[in-house]
Image (cartoon, rainbow over all chains, first blue to last red):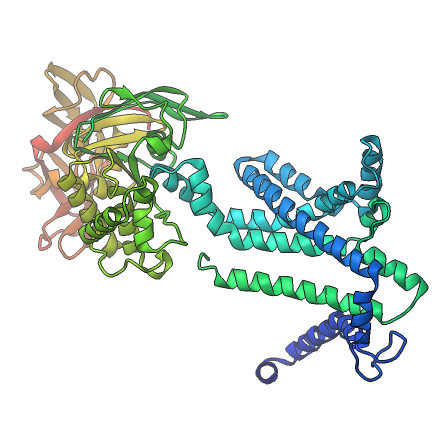
Length: 270
Length: 352
């Protein structure tokens, strides 16, 4: 904070306005998080802010509710599989994208990020029809496919950016020193893109964890992801258990971001 | 040690002909320079040699055997890149030992060979540094060591000095030449710097629009160029058009140029129009009556070690020459120019 005040006093007044804007923006972004985390520790019976007293009771209740815990486990499992699959496929796609040149390259990039551009609902409806056609509607596998599809662009963008940073001459140098394509990939490319790859996987996981619309349409019979379970829950009971669940989700996301920070920070490559 | 022959190499990109029949030969232990401006095909030729590009036609043989079917990673050639292409996540020693590790050699042997080559390129004490923590000159020496440690049959250098500042350039240049001669490795060297090409090479190929304009020793390239393009690219040069050319056979000619009659050597078999090449060092200022040519000084500049003059001849052509620094010339003065006939050279006029 002292640094900020310092900057303010040294700069022209126009920067004070800019600084205030940034602070307001942060308040706007952070307020819901602060409120939901605060509300989860209330001792009262309603989701409210500021909380009344302090207790862990809603966390205990969350873990005692089978529907919510099942939803959490389902979301974690689907998110993990989504992360692994999208990392692998996006890595291959990004490497292919490197080789494609000229006009085609632009179209390829666009195609890879298409799920971001098409409204989620449309993708979900289209996929649902397709899954009915191949007799896989309302199965966990179908839901998993939807999540992979929706999360792929996040992994792709991050990994493609990392691969673009690796000069082509490194691959040529490696080949001239006797490496096969696989050796070059394992010893040169993979270590260099690892931060981007990990970031892509974590983004993909977080995105999957958060998907609602597509999960609603594709959810398997008798199965719920955490966002669906929470929404069902809130429809009938407006209890701080939901706030506790939300806080856990936030913690998971922050954990992911911290992991990225740590991985990228530890990398000595760039 | 290897003899390398490139015959009629062709490479086409969509609508651009990058190589239009390149032929070259490097004898065992020679350093051959590919010299030319950007876009002339010198790097493309090198990349075909390395196996990074596939040629559309022609042949490359090493010791008589074709290598076009062999992928880059099995050619056993060392490549040094303009941007060094060091692996940024590996230390200096790991970079140099990379190829040895791929060959699955025992750790102790890798250790000694890396140590020895590091000494050779004077990198002692830097083995655990990362590439980004050492200077450009050191990085290029790591790249050189990384290629040399595998004892390659052929060393390919793609403008290895282009990213270095002038002082380092000199140092690394001599290091490359010394190592190449000590080890007797055949080498191809790509550059657009004529002084680099002159100083280092056994043979120089001057390239022009996907072809080899001339392939000869540095001395021949400089003193006996086959066309104006080559002469221009290899140093300061004056050209004077000839009014008449009479061939006397054996590459000797009698010509008339700028009001003077001369007998001199030239490219054998000139039939059409020709021009006279006069390097600045073949010219000497004399009194107006004594020289071969007479003209007027239009510019003179004192450069310290020499005096640089421009003289306009009677027919309007301009000659640049270097005179001793204490020579007295003033612009507007009438002077004569004496020619060292052994350094005058006749070339056919060819479209540039």
